[in-house]
Length: 297
Image (cartoon, rainbow, N blue to C red):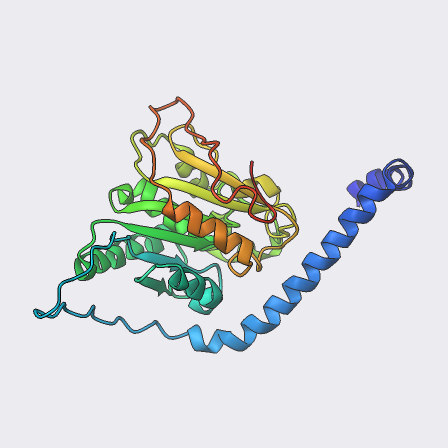
């Protein structure tokens, strides 16, 4: 209430000084909200189809009577969903990646009863080892939405996963913790995603020599990120690209075609050598820059 009283008298003045800017922001917010509700409705219909873990198919063995065409092997892509969600959130993104040459894509479900990000990250590590053994690849790429990105980051940064993870793409992930929905603190994973939590502080710790390339997509209209910049990766030891997405909300990040194009571009980049510890490795090269509402921040 104190904040409301302090802000309300200033709003008419802001309207007089910046009428077009406020009107544009309101229209963008309305459009983003309408899109969020449309995506939510569609996702609720698809949700039951993603409850069961997807079937792992054995890769076809090459026949002896054919000569394989020379192709550049791309790492498998692992998709990690967010809190109280499942793999169905990635239906459109998975199709998009497959249409553009990604031949091996797997969506991993973690249990909605999971109460610890560290436990989920360790389980992710076991899945990745199995995938590498099954595919014959030494590395994977990860795309994580919201909490899924935080699980992927903990595995990569704190459990030695940088040996296996070539590129980690996060979509609306609270890397520095989010203050939204304080009533949700009853759930232990939500408490771990708060600013200043033991887990968030652990991720702030030194990570010298980390080999993974981090690409974080964050939206300027994401209602679940408080503050908005918490969805950016800010760490001196990590090779990072933070990509700002304009005009869409949290649920749209794994669905929007412009974001999908940015993800594809990020996965196709050849990761550079990590900067020395403390040198500041935040990259300015554009993963998806200029691709319809995406800008490097």
